[in-house]
Amino acid sequence: MQATLETRGASPARVAAAAPAEWRENARLAVSLVVNVEEGAEMSVARGDPTMEPVDEFGMFAREPLRNLSNESNYRYGLNQGAARIARLLAKHRMRATWTCAAEALEASPHVARLIADGDHEVCAHGNRWITQLRMDEATEREFIANARDSIERTTGRRPAGWLSRYYTTLNTRRLLVEAGYRYHMDDFSDDVPFWDGGHERPILVIPYQLDTNDMKMWNHPSYTPDQWLKYACDSFDWLLAETRELAVPRIMSLGVHLRIIGRPGRIGAFEKFLAHVAAADDACVLTRLEIAAACQPTLPLESVP
Image 1 (spheres, rainbow, N blue to C red):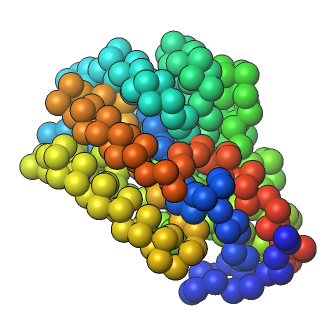
Image 2 (image 1 turned 120 degrees about the vertical axis):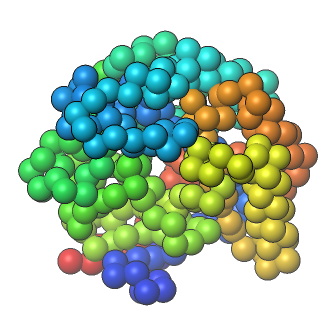
């Protein structure tokens, strides 16, 4: 059934609720597994950036135009070992994920693109490089978004339907995504269900993401252990599942992981335990974000808002 547009919460955009009553038969909770591929596209003086990549497991960063060779090698671990470990686990549990990829990372590591294709996973754009858009003017950001789309289509054979920025966006981002033909946008943390943003040339689906369940917490806070991360993720899943049962409402849960972080031997087991925990619930399902978007399509607003 199509929906008319309405205002949702305090968002400045005019939107319409998008979630169906069930994601799959008897499953009101959809889990979205998001595998971030940033390695090889992060900041580096070697790639023409003014400084080194600031996201470092030890928090080491210098503003001078120097290379951090140690951190660069830490990122390469995700390509050399982490990607294959994650892909094997997903295959073992027969689960498909959304791999959010910086385009240049796939260009530099075609074996990762093959892992995505071989596992029949979804590929989503995570920028042309893993850099922020915050200070881009409109023309630069438009080119950045289009280049990512075209590059990923060349390396994987699939045009990405969704977009995730490196956190910072601009006031132009979502409109430019619509212009470039993207179907959904992930840069939102405001809800546990998708919604339509109809304030553009055509409505675009917003599928909220989560930071609180992201494995990046184990890099930002080294004392945060894999067991703690796993408990938080399972608690989040259990609470949302209980809500779907009690209130008979749909929900989505996002779990974001990174090749270089969860792919380490001391952390990957926590990821597998979470997958097993999800699989044990017969009224939840694991969907790619493209599958979530397809399930929301019948709720497309009747008209966009100028």
